Image: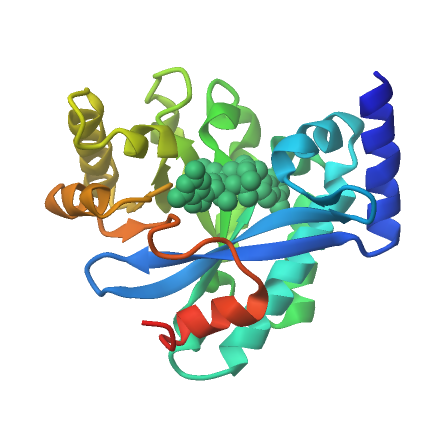
Length: 261
Ligand code: C2E
Ligand code: MG
Ligand code: MG
């Protein structure tokens, strides 16, 4: 309770004192062998503790409702970056920006108006913005969110199912959830090539994505052997330390403009 209280108070201060930051992890196109976009990931630059990762504070932010103003800041900052790189040149103009959205944000009454306002004020092309929603959120509650999600899509914004494969094995929500992308959770990618069920499971997930016409992205790719298997299985996009770690805006721009490979 003491820790929660401290984190909550710290987060309020972080919002007011500009201590939140985004890092960007580039997304690799396996077929084209180049970066085609990036995912924005939040960090908290605590003056006392240094860089704090989202695993340590997103949950508390959700439970306290602070995720709503924090999520708004993330969306604004990510769209500002998207607008900046879109202006930098022809290659960058088609690169996408993915933003993680919490269920608590989706439930808040202001979510869709915030989204339209950010798109308008930052002047971005909505089809270059992709909102990532964790699969576990969608399980069972998809009817509850489907109106908000359909509205998001009616603006031209894309939707991605994050951590695919980690929910409770019901595929029923895929019938109603209007997704554009599916991200295979890194836990399935980790053991690719070892004597496990992960190869056939990943093959099956890629087949599901392909047959539904979704863009499939493998997360957490760290080794060349994993990439080779993913390529053989027909996976077209990947993210992971093998290609690029989450990095600052300027470094991400270098990746996206193909300066580093
Ligand atoms: P996620 O959206 O599934 O993001 C992928 C996580 O895997 C990131 O951790 C990323 O740094 C890490 N990662 C990338 N490549 C590799 C790899 O090759 N190996 C390994 N082991 N890890 C890799 P991070 O940045 O700590 O974020 C953790 C989670 O926190 C995210 O999972 C997402 O669910 C949440 N999150 C991050 N930023 C935000 C945000 O702005 N808003 C909300 N609501 N949640 C966020
Ligand atoms: Mg994500
Ligand atoms: Mg994920």
